[in-house]
Length: 438
Image 1 (cartoon, rainbow, N blue to C red):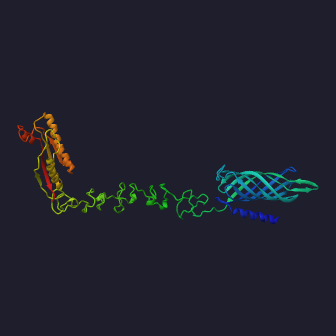
Image 2 (image 1 turned 90 degrees about the horizontal axis):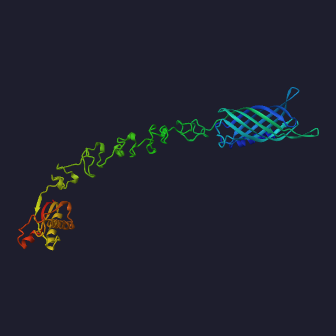
Image 3 (image 1 turned 90 degrees about the vertical axis):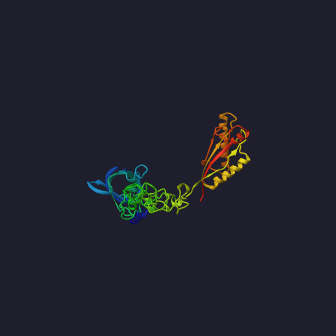
């Protein structure tokens, strides 16, 4: 018997090594109840004690001792003593009920060694029960079960003492839950088991994150304002990589070297300090961010072709004078607006003069003789003026600086009294002003 007891105890400790422990992995149960002998049909008192070990959410391993006392001649006499190794299957394993449920139903069964007043031997038991949590460490249990007896022969009579029993009592849990990071939350419940020492945690064992930005308070430079990990939990409203707390322009994207303020014209002076924030890129500026104008002519140096000599703004800072050119006119055939070869020669000279100048104004006026109606001649004069413009454009002249008008027969160069005079009136005349390049 001693050998069997040692085997049972060793079996208990071998299996306990595989436990996935909850907060308290050991429990001691003390209880009592009644049992009934099914062979002789008598009832007695059965005290019990057990030691259980948490294996996982579904199973506990129990080493139990049950005794039975019956009343004979008003004296309590031990009838049975049963040492059992039981496996308890818990229904509060997360499938039917949560593991932390206050009601904890279970099934149990196992093998044991029964000492009966008729003999001893190996037996088994099975049953059902439930526990009711009274505190984190204490529970009330109630269970009923079957104890299979042993086969014996007494006075030539074969007998089997089997028993029904109903018991109840208290279970006391003990043991220290593992808490690897020592934050006060056992590893079984700790969703952040590697929290650094000394960090304040929530009920799940995770570092507090007051602003809910995913960066724990102990790593968050702005623990009360949601931010981003790249800036240690601080916000960056304008997305320029400078935390708002360090950003002199928190609502405008800027540069780190200017404390988050922009330098729109890239002149080295941040916009809040720049009195000329629209300076063309590359222009030298003064301390206020304004472009230099060395000759004081109102044309900044980077746009002044003559930065050391005062000039005209519309001549890129250089001094210049306008010059009037006299070219033309050109003549057209009767009732035509086509450019003739001799007219093309004159217009080529006009185009060259315009293209060689720094700036120009060009006005062309179309005319006719008096043959035809006034309305027809007005339209024909306009066509002649446009023919000149189109020809010049084909030579590269910008029509933005060219004006064209038709005057019909209203402004004859000669009286329309002869064929030669009328030929001279079928014309286009020019008014040309140019400003030469320096």
